[in-house]
Image 1 (spheres, rainbow, N blue to C red):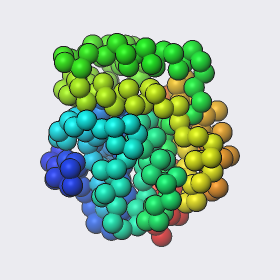
Image 2 (cartoon, one colour):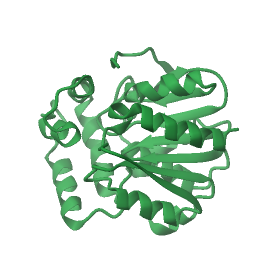
Image 3 (tube, rainbow, N blue to C red):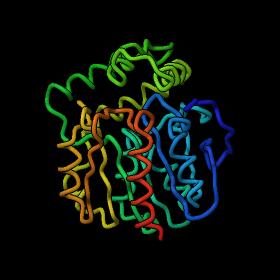
Image 4 (cartoon, one colour):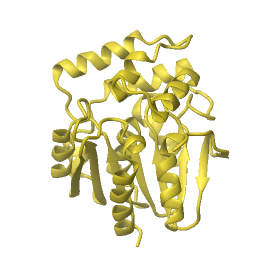
Length: 259
């Protein structure tokens, strides 16, 4: 599919893409991306009878950058938007935010789906992600070459081109701030995962080197109603590169949580 820019509404302090009518599904993107990264999921879920709300993270897309203090600072604007039953869906850092909100015991969160979520990085992986965060320039455009190679390898595609554009357009200070929070958080603590009472779905790609299948399975075992699904031949950008498989998993899960 093509990844064209979609209209936004200002909702609270965030700009967001809104589509469809029905029970609410809120989708949180990862660092350096924007709400359009959920394009394939927006179309499928809204057509299936759900209201889909995809906010831009501070400093990303149409949301202005403001200093957010730690993971709580990114979670609070999302929590402020939840005024009805919702399924939270997050990718990468968005998954970390979604799980954090679910673990806080928010009663309106009826389900949480964490895509490509991190949990207990290896020492080498943790050192590498912290080094990448420290090297980011918060005043000018950062070179996205290494990031795109991790996500897509050397294969050109519409998805690669879209992510290249988004990474070049993101606010540098917002990008560094978000990436630093993501790098410094190694996933939720075991006790936090055990506090998630709603159904929790952990999905990652078979070929994902950083948010590995083992991580998703380990988190699913800790959550009270956790389940893990591994998508064959997929890696970090599976919502864009493997939309059919991701959409099928999400639809089954959302229908279970918001019948």
